[in-house]
Image (cartoon, rainbow, N blue to C red; front, side, top):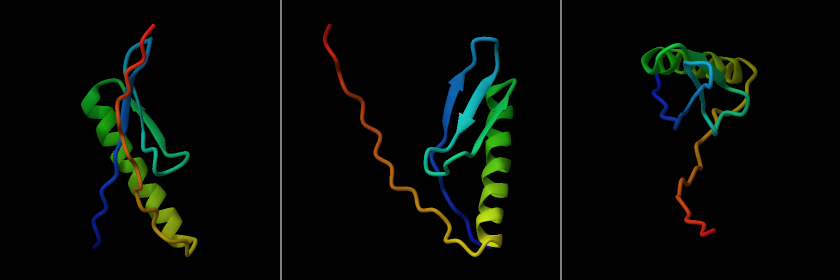
Length: 74
């Protein structure tokens, strides 16, 4: 069994809970009422995403992501 590591982004929703997604996996999104639930749900979504990619004979996506804060003066 292979193990893969992906960056996830968690955003607070205005009405509560969290939206979660992985930038490396286009269209792979989930949500949860709590931070822990959102993390569990996106982990499950990523697993399903990768299983689907594999089932279609496509290569497992590699993460090529650079996160860098920038400052903007107003």
